[in-house]
Image (cartoon, rainbow, N blue to C red):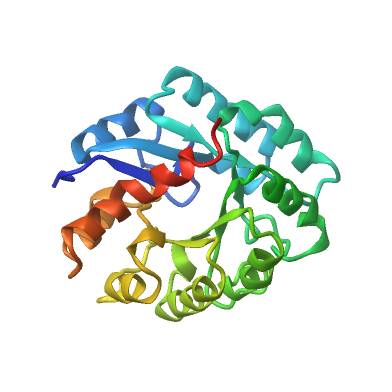
Length: 256
């Protein structure tokens, strides 16, 4: 299966994952899959950074972005628990992309996304019009979608991607509730669960312009995510928006 239009994938990873020990995860191997599916650009975050070590993980992303600048965009992953580290990492890797791409993983970093230690990151994102990808899961105390509603309203210049859209059916419903109330929030369809008609419900609820394609490559099968969009009962124009145009627009907005 190959996309009829170039894909701009908002949600990918780089590096080994303890739950997927046999997955081929090098940049070169991922590009081979991208070429098969017509993924023009993949936005990546470091798995190491999500789990334990942001400085080393972001350095891994820097190598991939430097070697393949036309194929990868780099998220700067930040951990709020170490005082001052988040802003240091954002400054150190500010050249990854403009406007900045920021990744938050409140679940693995064991800190609520609306906690005070994240406030400097949200201030930074608001000032720079950053695109912020936040891992979400239904009703989770650290990363439930509903936690992002007040944040989106307080920091309206940050563009917030609800990573996985809460994963479950109820998580999607919570994400749609947030997105309906905050125009600077977007649904990322990446996820290990596939719900019949959920793409149609998302498009009907907030419009195709705020639904983004994500694969979770290399840990999840990108062709499955592509199939969800190509088989959805929405128009070809809406599919084209989701597969590429929406994320490309976010990548380009704010660039001088």
